[in-house]
Amino acid sequence: MRPKIIPSRSIARSLMYNEEKVTLRQAEYLVAGNFLKDLSRLSPEDKLHCFQRRMELNDRVVTNQHIMLNFDPLDKLSNDQMKKIAQLYMKEIGFGRQPYIVYRHYDAGHPHCHIVTTHVCSNGDPIKLYNIGRNQSEKARLRIEAEFGLVTTEMKQQLRLQEQKIDGVQRIKYGEGSLSRSISRVLEYVTKDFKLTSLTDLNAVLRLYNVEAYRGKESSQLYQHRGLLYRALDENGKYIGVPLKASFFDCKPTLDNLETKFRQNQSLKQQCKERMIIYTRYGLYGKPQDLKKVRHSLTREQIHLLLRRDKEGNAREVFYIDFRNKCVFTGDELGEHCNVVAIQKVIDRQRQLEKEQTLQQNLNKSLKQTPGYRHSLHL
Image (tube, rainbow, N blue to C red; front, side, top):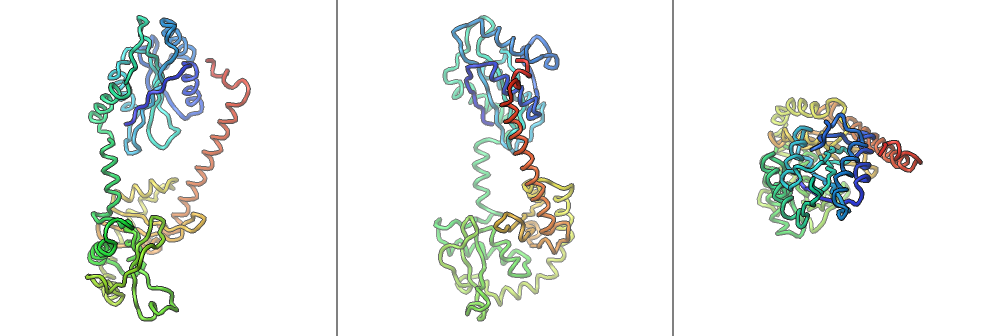
């Protein structure tokens, strides 16, 4: 959780911002703390009047607080959970008896809420704000993360470290350590454990580790003499550094040895096909509009979706890599529900949704510039 306390010189402006979000259905009310009326009975005028009356008790205070509580996208919080978190946070920072309103917003890719409040107490004394972010807010964050099981900064750092590894094997980063030793570790793992049936399968897995097996052009001597090179790739999929011959590695991943394994793996791979069809179809069921959600659904079953795109960003090739059974399938091998066409439909729906969101944002901006629009909120 990442709290952020923002001083604001206008309580009306803070309220208007959040009320507009509710009007545009980009936010909803969660709770109104320490008001005389229930949230459902509070009008915008009631809210503003309450805050203004409180601030009139101390004319030396010219600011109010606009607080944001930001959560990690992995934190799946219900409204009730977020409400309880906001209430506990306000209590922990010394604002538990202050009037405040909590709004849950939906205008970003992560869960978050906004809290409008004032630090003028009922007796006119102001709450001390010196180092509140470093002291009270930080203590509140630690307690809330532990109590509600939220993703912490330490957990995010651990996740980033894990992303550098796939199934326990380190991804190659050019310039970090011995390149030949790193490629060798990847090759030993992939060629030994995976039920590969072609160079296409092999490269689908190797590219996850920033490695590629390269035969050369058909007219080249390398190709005609059945040679095979292994080269490192950068994060954009472009090869970098000096390629190494297959015979250089102890596991001897030469074309002849690989093709022998490819033939042996044909029947073993087919035994895993039914499971892959079930889970890939499930991941693409219901016309999903977000490729990240498809990937997340498959990842839970230890299936990695590898998508290769053209210059326009359209799907060119799709592979499904099963790390549980150590096998690879192309989209075509799994049928029309999982092939390139099916993935392209997800991409098209996602683009359409993003286009509609952009149009809505532009419309919202134009509405805000319309004379009299702000007065329609009766603030």
